Length: 353
Figure 1: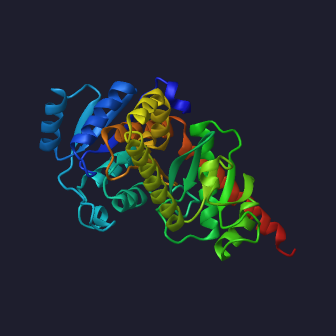
Figure 2: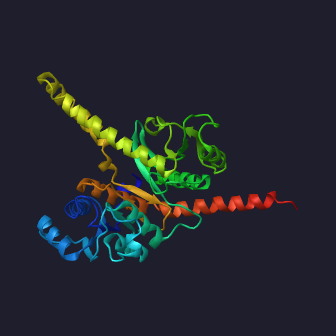
Figure 3: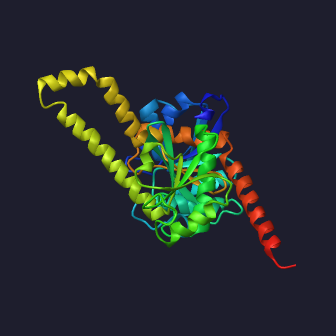
């Protein structure tokens, strides 16, 4: 990633109470992150709990970690608007407040996904000109990565929303992965322009007017074959693709482990191929990618898997740092503004004189 070699620091608000393995795995991830990257971490949660667990894991509070007290916790099963309506002093809400107050550059949470998104949406607000935020998942392909969005922020979307997703995905792929002209595809059931439902057909038309490197419809196989750098879809379809992909990756890894231990000869072969298996596991492991950025809000927001390990949290902090230092938010804001300006000028030009 482009910012990986930079020595510039940034400050990340980390939800210490969110996730299936909180707070220990979250705290471990924070400790690993400050050891690996020039970042400052604001650990947000019930101070006495966080302080006690941090002391037991590290012996003391490292210089670049600060505890910020938040008395409430949004549980996984609670409604998405809980931190907005009821638990305003929850760790998720306080993380968003810290970013909004410029005390942090970005927030990271493995807690209630809906609550994290609603906090970012309501507290940070949207980039001017963006109607809907989008969760962007990073998936492996033979040549690098594919950015898939939206993967869950919006169940129903309009063509204008998918067009905005394409713009945001374009800049994420460009600035984070260094792809000069990202190839943008529209997820559909066939490559031809006329394939798909009414949403994809109309979106195909408006996508051609964005000025992006739009390559047309992308089929399911294109998510992983490297034919596209960015693939856009509504959040319902995207979430199904993401969850199915995660399950498939876990099944392949589990099956490989089972099969290579079935005989002494296979065990020998597995030892010889250990580095190859390790690389395969790394490419398919969601924890390597940390979390999904919520694109379109003012400030960085990285949403992690609920069962994130310390490794996943560490990598999510890296993603938040790269997002901040590469100015993804600013680039999206400029492009969206240009797009709406061109639309306005075109509409004026088409009016009868």
